[in-house]
Image: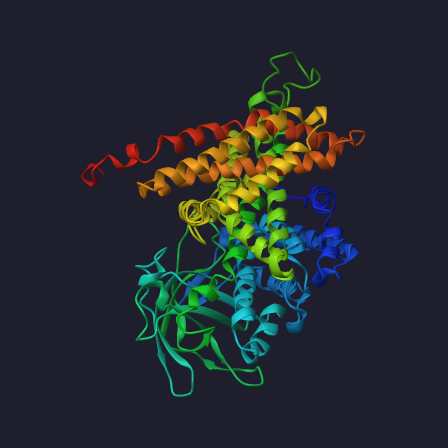
Length: 590
């Protein structure tokens, strides 16, 4: 079976020693009341709940799956009680505004509890997180009357939430959606259409489900400029907050999927359902995208969570599994064979996965810091933070989920044939994490967003400030233990900067250059960012070698520099190759 123990020491290292969270919170007036002792208690309680209650449901939930019967969706045994505990414990409202019953914790805290939750059970995690995302969008765009009525119930776990974007014919291209919203005399709207791939569209975990639905008014402009956002409750809500009759919305089916089988992925039918406008007419995408930076960060965290469990499980297996003898001489003569850990290739897979995991955790916290600044700071500081978030969001989503999947596959390989057998848990991790590369904007789309909108469109303005910051960090790496990391990091920064300018120049005469370079460029950006994170972690660990924890950090930073970071060069060369070889084939060839 898979094993998981929350890496609290590593989390505290990143929180306290790398990012000096207490100083950061004190520097932002809106966060002054965040108390470090309280945060420690939150992390410990999150670990306890997830390890003891939610993680044990992961395999059984996969075996049972969500069940659909005549419009009713039933979640696996144990999920309903766990969801109740999760809601009553305040976890859904942990980062929410106290005005609606939340605890008001910043993303620099909830990013860590999100990792713990995704490590424990990604299928379960999606149910509360979709409600959190919907509530976030509502909190910034809905009226006070709607928010006061709905948000406390979502944050308590009494009600759940969804976001309904995709349609059978419209995935990435939301501008061609067909769902219609017809104005009614009472100020509401009649919503008609079909949505697919709706996570938690129907289930038995909460009394009510609040759908946020993208739709078009009859006279809406063509394309994405004509999309509006509507709140459509499963049950009508009375003025006093009690539930009324069932609305004309329901699940037509649930998908039978490769992974996250305990998460109900629904086909949702809206048959003249009563809905309420959120935000302004024809500005639905802007309202919906309030939640997207947070959701896309969550999908990156899903990749990290799965890879962390995969690493812990594979490392435990490698310690115990006796196979063969060391090439440099017997290490355990009292045993019939040495452990798997004597073999360099086993170590290669484990160390690569761990190096990516620790860099990913640091990168999540780095991004969370800028999310907090964009939300809680003011003026130029908030604006600059929002620009940094815009730049990093596609990278966090795509690179972390790509590397999370890769880490799960490598960990599965450590198990050999046992990795392919269900009882060991590795095949479930591989199946479950695969979706993180697809939903919330497939990774190729994320790469195109990075390359097209965040780099080429603004002539690398966002990249230049990030590069300047990384160069400052590289200049601080002067300890002997960080020499090879500094060399690799500086070379990566130079490579990223040169590639950025090259694609901008090539795209001026050939629009295909942007998409042709996008995925490989994102990986170059990701590797460089991970090198930056390792520079920050190494800087925090230098001078503390008397503690093995810090010595191990420096050793893994060096390993990343010489055994992982060089992978970036292959991606860089593919960017340099340009679009010609891709686009030279006729469509008939395929």
